[in-house]
Length: 312
Image (cartoon, rainbow, N blue to C red):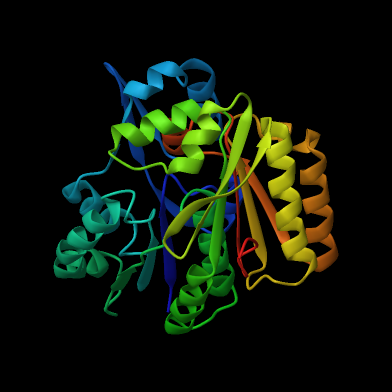
């Protein structure tokens, strides 16, 4: 039985990995005034967005996922004829309506797929599962990569779902923003409480927070003076998780809101890469999606893994 994987544009994985594992990306749109940018995880377009559009104007930006009808057509036109099962791993439903939209679209997909599969000479039933990832950005990358690895191994669909549930429960997604004031303003626009610690970090000169999302709880776990110091702290903390064997996945994902080559300049990233190589863990580095950058600002770092929480 053929199993397909769908992620949305905020899932941070390298383009080559997406292609090699046939992971389908559901695009999103970004509206800034009269301009419209489509985010489909295309590296050049994403870097052009960073260099030409991201900035203070992005405080007025609006991100938008596909409407229900378009999601339904995306699946019917591109997926139901090629796969028997599809696993959807969208952004955390507490941060986006996309999970609900895909769930609603699935009703139409499951009611109308037969005529599309008849064209593909397949009479087997089609099924799909929409998961609540409970995570963001690089965390989505970890879950999608683990799912793809199990599919490539030829695992049964239900076994893949069971494994993904375990990975999801232990996913830790971390963020170091470069512009804390930007993050606070975007959160204020969404009506969210950024918390007193992040407020203090935003007021203090040069202090950058390290924020972690785990089991539906987002909190500031550390802070350092200067972005590079905070980034190195986070990268070395994750490297320790890898070295101690605290992972329950074979991937660590990292994304950066700009040219990813900047990561190579960080001693902490080199330490993390060495730890992953020593443990046989795959480190996947990518450009942070434009959709993510609108919410957390250019220059942000996201690092994620599935395993023990490093800040208990």
